[in-house]
Amino acid sequence: MNIIKGMLLTMFCLLSSISIYGTEEDKVIEVIKSWASLEGDLNAQAELIRDDRIMIAGPYVWPDQKDNLMIQNERRAATLKRDSGWKIMQTIISPRVRIYDNVAVAHFIRRFDVIPTEGDVQPPSMDNGTMVLVKEKGNWGIAHTHFSQI
Image (cartoon, rainbow, N blue to C red; front, side, top):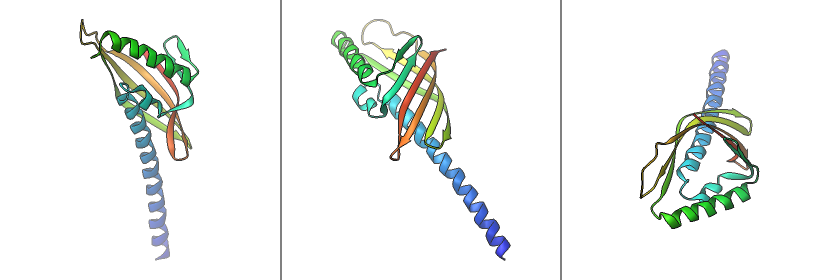
């Protein structure tokens, strides 16, 4: 009887650890999808980004999140002044996540749509995206982003 109890306890522990990792992967994916959905509200989006985040997009590197946010807000304000109905949307496709203790590495395809109220709507941009997230005080924060156009 003790052998059966031991086997059941071992199986329970193994299954519990599997669900914990699945849950953490789901939390990381939720952070990434939330970040994407907040593209229209850069300040809310920035709440998911660590101050030490480094962003790489094509040939450009932004090593300072505070300066990056300021520049994005200024560019967004100038665009909205010319076209108050202008929208930008991101969609995250096929995210994959690997967890390493308090670090997560994610890859996904990002569809990036810019939708003006006037003029032609351009085709979406498709990018390979990689993010590194760090978990501190129970929360995942974006520490690194890299986008390469497909």
